[in-house]
Every structure is written in C-alpha cells, then in structure tokens.
Image (cartoon, rainbow, N blue to C red; front, side, top):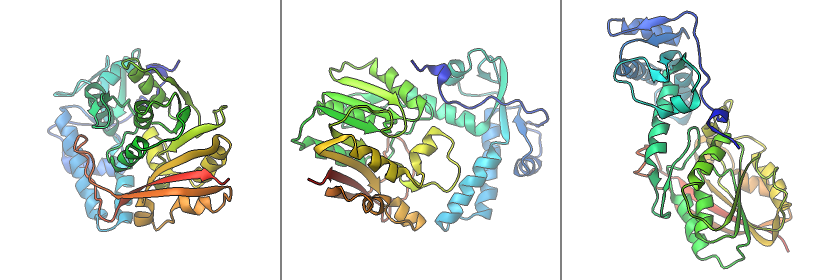
Length: 355
C-alpha cells in the first residue's frame, strides 16, 4: 500500500554557500544573484520572498513580453529555473520565517527530517496544494468534494468533463466494466461510479494520484468494484472485453523535460497516442467505446496537427463513431485560475472497433 512516505515530493536541499536575504538587503543584488543561478535564502518574512519573486517576474516579462506563445513558454522556462534559486529553511517541519503559512504536507512528507531547505516555488506549491486538499473542491456534477493530493492534476476547465457526463447520462450500453486511464484526481472515475458501472479500474503512473484517491475512497460509501493501479496507460491491465475506456490525455506536446506529476498531465510525449490505441484495441470489447477527451490547444498554440486524428490513420481497425465539440469556457471560478479561451474548444472522441 502506497503511503505519504512513498509519495512524489520536493527533494530536501542543503545549499553549502548562499546569500542571506533580509529586509535590509539590496533587492537588485538579490535579483542578480538569482539570475546568475546563485542560491539565496530568505531569512526574514514570507512576504519578502513573495516580493523578490514578483520582481523576478517583472525582469523576465521585459525580456520575454507576452506577445506570442513562444515568449510565454520562454518566460515560464526561465522563471522556473531562476526562481528555484530562492530558498526557505525548514526546521521541525516549520518554515523559519515570519508570517509563514502552516503546511501540513511538511509533517506528512518529512516526519524525520529535522532541518533542510526547499525552494520558494516548491513551498508555494506545497502551500497551495495543502489548501485544496484540506478544503476540497465541489463540482456540480458530483455530490461530494474532490480533495486533490499534492502533485496531482485536477481540471480547472470543466467543458470536456461536462461533455462526458452528459454523454453518459444518455448512454444505453452495457455497464459491466470501465477503465479510467490516467485518472488523476479521480473525477472521471467518480462520474463512472455515479452512472453505476459495476467494475471500474483506474490506472496512473503518478503514485500520488493513487495515494490521494485511496484516501478519498475511505470517506465514500460506494457499492462498485473499484481498483486503482500504478501503470503506464493500460500496460498493467489483464482484463479484456471492457465496455468503456475513457482517457483524458495531456493537451499540449512536450517541448521540455517532463518531471512532475502535474507536467505529465499537461504535456504529452510523441508516442503517447500510438501506445494508447495499441493497448486499447486489445482491451475493448466489440461494440465497446474508447473515449478521449481533448482540445484544440496544440493546434492553436504549437502549430501541431491533432494527434488523435493523425494517429487514428495508423489503425485501420478503428473508426470514429462520434465526435462532440464545445466552445471552451473560462477556468472554473472555484479554482480562480486565469485562462485565455479565445478560439479554443474541447472535444470528445467516441471510437470503436470496426465490425
């Protein structure tokens, strides 16, 4: 059984030499150190770290103005690199600066670690994740809250989820078995539960997702046979003749090394769709539905062909039964994440084996 100790989490750091930043430090000097990849430790207040990072953003936005998608990617790449040169000290699972948030993950992830350092962005990620995990997120199509675990993706746009939910509400086929590929925070699995699929298997390569959904299931009263396993796509599934396979793949092609669990949920490698269809063909029953929830983001922002359409051309045994589309709306107001949805739409592909 996976536990907090076996989760993916930030690796403790111990920089040997570093500049100590306090309220009397020269901000320009601090920023120059960060840009030159020299470690800086905040030794005053949490708000000082926020101020330093806000000024780092201003420098990078001048260098990479947000007038095209390429610049936005360069900005994110360099901010990710330079901001991780700013550190906070943790002692006895507490941040050693004034006005710091209490982050429960520090006690759960590092129970025996007395003193160490994490980068400021890592702390921000832990803090934000802890708030979501503690408070939960309510979605109208479920009668309970989702409590996403650390480093587990959860959707901020719901149009593709609603397409699936509405399609299932009219679904008249068999409900003996279903597979949710890359289940993440478990939303699609919970929708399958709602529509009374008897046996549901979820697969995930991210151990944090499995830990999180098992914690969530302990709080729910459910009758279905549920199983969540760690494997890539369908590689760990022995069952065949599955009635429905649903996959909400990443929506953007990877153009940088993919490290975190959340990155793996956002960016897809070149061979992802070929591998998925290869494995799905051997699992789906005749007349069963292979469903992919996708969008046109890759086509809009990276000048890339739709990978589902181009990959399906290599599988003559499959045909498109149905393709639904919907204009993308703004991110969920429950998450308060900003997004530009101009010209974006989501799509739901329903694919079957040819008879």
